[in-house]
Image 1 (tube, rainbow, N blue to C red):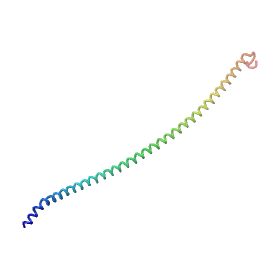
Image 2 (image 1 turned 90 degrees about the vertical axis):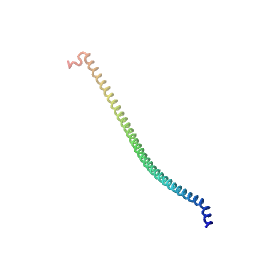
Image 3 (image 1 turned 180 degrees about the vertical axis):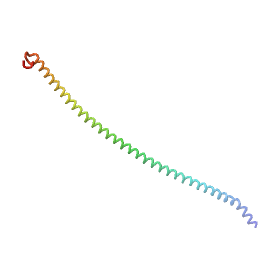
Image 4 (image 1 turned 45 degrees about the vertical axis):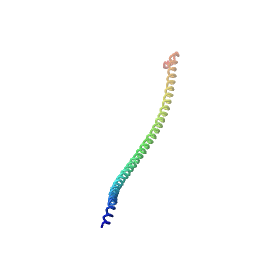
Amino acid sequence: SGALLEKERALAPLTEKAEGLLRSNAVQKRQLELMQQDLDAANRRAAGLQAELAAALAAAEQAELAARQEISFHERRQKELYLEVDAQRARYERRDRLLRARCRLLQTWCFRLWWGLEADATIPGGGGGGG
């Protein structure tokens, strides 16, 4: 029994050291589990943020596409209006030229009529009504 006590005394520090290592191992294992849970939570948050980012990018692309389409529509409409204004301007310029030509014709006709009346008034016995 003395040998057994001697053996237990010799093993006691090793047993205590082993138990300390086991406790330390258990603590480290728990720390590892907690870190793994933190990592999993961080990965879930990252995945959620990536999904939000993808949705925001898709919405931004849709908004950009809609804006580009609206700009394109307004550019086409602006060109149409410019063409319409040019066509109206051309019509009004032509009408103006025709009206000016008519005015010149009327002026010429009035002048000739006036000249003819003046000529009849200066000719003795002319324009007096058959006299």
